[in-house]
Image 1 (cartoon, rainbow, N blue to C red):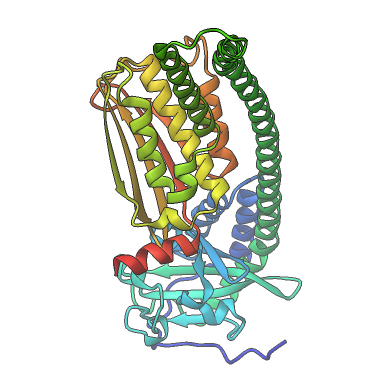
Image 2: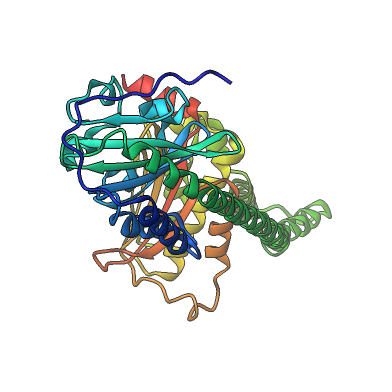
Length: 435
C-alpha cells in the first residue's frame, strides 16, 4: 500500500467560532448514530446525518460519495448539484477530491475551493463548486478494514469557515458512517445482482417461448405451402397430365387444343415462383434488404385489384448491406408481416415503409417504420387473431430489436416501428460512405 502524502490545507483560519464541549459532541454523535439506524438507502441516510450534524458542524452542503471500481456515486444533503443529479456514475479521475478517494492524502481542507487550483485541474468535474458557491470544505475518507470505500464531505459558502480543529470531528463522523454505508453498498449490489439475474431468466424464458412460437409458425407455414402446392399447382398439373394422356392415346390434335395447355403451364410456373419467392426472398439474398423490401411491396400491392398505393424510402446509408443474412431475413419477415397485416385488415389506401440510419450517441441504430392510413387496429383484448403481431414481436426480440405498434399520432392509421442497434462494422461503413 502506498504511503499517504501529507494532509492538504489552504487558507488562513479566522478567529475560532464557538464550539461544543467534548460531552456535548459525544451526545450529538450518539444522536447521529440513532438517526442513521434504520435508514435503508443512501439518500435518506445522508439527509438524517445532515440534520443532526448541523447542530455541531454547521454546513450548507453535505455529501457522501461511494466508490464503485473506478467510478463514484454521490449522495447530497442541503444543496443538490450535478454530483448526485448526473444520470451516470462519475470517473474518480475527474473528481475534485480524487486525492482523498485514491488514498493520496489523509484529508483535504481548503478555505476557498472556488479559488483553490487543486480542485480545478484539467478534466475536473468541479463546476458545482461555482454553481453553489462552495468555498470552505473538508473531505475525509470512508475507511472499512483499511480500504477506502468513499469520502465524506462538508462544505460552507462562507470562506475559511472550517479549520484544522474540525478535521478530527469530521473523521469521527466518517468512521461512524463508513461501516453503515458499506453495508448499504453491499445490500444494493446484492439487490442489483438479483434484478439482473431475474431479468436474465426472464429473457431466457422469453426467448424459449419465442422460439417455440416461431417453430409452431414455421410448421404452419410448411403446412400452408403444402396445401398451396396440393390445391393449386398439383391440381393444375394433374389436369394437364390427363390432357396430355388423351393426346397420347390418339385424340385428334386441334390447333386450339394447345393454347389452354400452354396457359395452364404458365399459370403453374407463376404459382410455383410465388410460392418459392414467398418461402425464400431471392431479391433479398441477391441485392440486399432495401431492394428486397421494395420488390416485395411491388409484388404484394401492385395489381391484383388491391388498389393500395405504396411508397418506400431508403435513408439507411448502406448500413444494412453488412448485416448478416439471418438478421436481414428476420427484418424482412417483420416488414412482410406488417405490410400483409395492413393490406388484409386495415383497409388502407396507402402503405409507406421507411428505412433509415439514426445516430445514437457514439453508436447508430437502424430504424424501420411501416405506416398505413387505414382504420387502425383493435386493442389486444379485442383482437381475435394476434399471431402476426406476436410473431413480429418474437422475431424482433430474438435479434435484439425494439418493436412497437401503435396508432399514428395523426389518428390516420397504424405505425409499426422497429429499432435495431447497428454493429460497429455497419455503423463504420455507413459513416465512411457518408464522409
